[in-house]
Length: 192
Image (cartoon, rainbow, N blue to C red; front, side, top):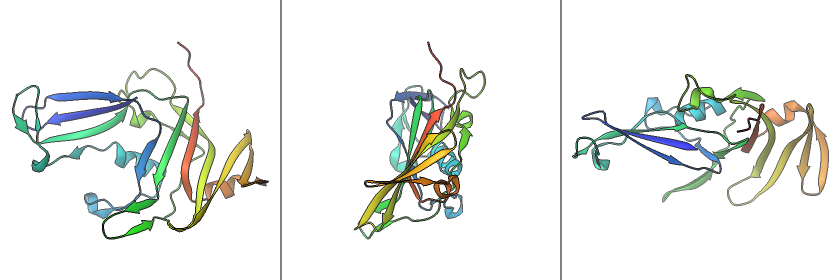
């Protein structure tokens, strides 16, 4: 469950909404803030995704606390996580001026902890460690291309799926690939 907190800059009133998600779509392009930095890792992308964003004077909202239109900030965090999380790295950029593929290398880990991106970091219920189990890649340009996938078959065995051809793959090949969709599963399943 995705949590969105909008904070009024006048009275610090917080409006919180919750939305389900299928995947987490992460921007790879330069930011207009923080010196135009482009992300280098999946963690960089997640930090940017969950960073507070100033909405500006053109996007004033009516604060439910002070009952007036005010500037605000918006911040995403993750309230709950599914057993499988998919990350969509936005490699295709469409604008009025240009359509292009972003081919920059984004490093992604085999295992990582999602706790820093959770809404409640302290006293958070559960274990938020995840392991990589599949990577979908796009090879080619924005106009023409081909999809392949790496899938973990057993603990340390990876295979490459390229149409009807399935071959063995090394972890290095997986981690060196140009990930488009990354699939992680929870290390510890919890039951209610």
